[in-house]
Figure 1 (cartoon, rainbow, N blue to C red):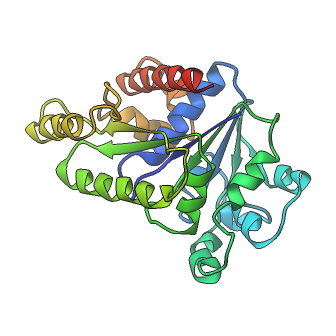
Figure 2 (cartoon, rainbow, N blue to C red):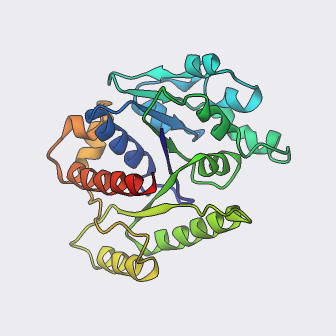
Length: 258
């Protein structure tokens, strides 16, 4: 079971789109996929038609009680795609930093919960909120690889700098370094700003930046409006083609690490 966390401390860079696109492509290849929504806004959950206000069980329960494997499985929501399940988010997640932030041992809640699902899924992909707190710390600590989508514009590069510093701080004394891949998103080859930001990314993080780019593609928005994963809605679109290439790259990296 491989765990990927999609994270960036800047909003609007394509985290949820990346989570859904990679999850859809993995499911298409026959892998059993669990998508975990750790963002109180619950965009990932809403994408698949899950109304968080109606849920009795969600990610939130993992933090407020010790959950057995059976309880975790009961928290999962199926989707219209047979190989994709969701562990949904609720607004109550927004209170966790205030209620649990100072409590010891809260950084590994998600990791311990996910370990109980060994054998149930091939891939788990976690979508993070754009703020550093209990939820992001948990998602980072649980992951085998961190995927960092970065919009190709200069303000997003500042957000990336904060994200890198966060990972360095969390690394602390650990011997296993965080493995992460930077993914340039919302790339528009017609604009000078996109081209310059992309070149800057390659200069600053030559060994960490995926060599491709995810272009601006209205198919992502259109797919979300009818609650279909992009690879189902527009399989030959340039955006989906980019995520196919990214997935091939990530699978190669996973194979090297195992």
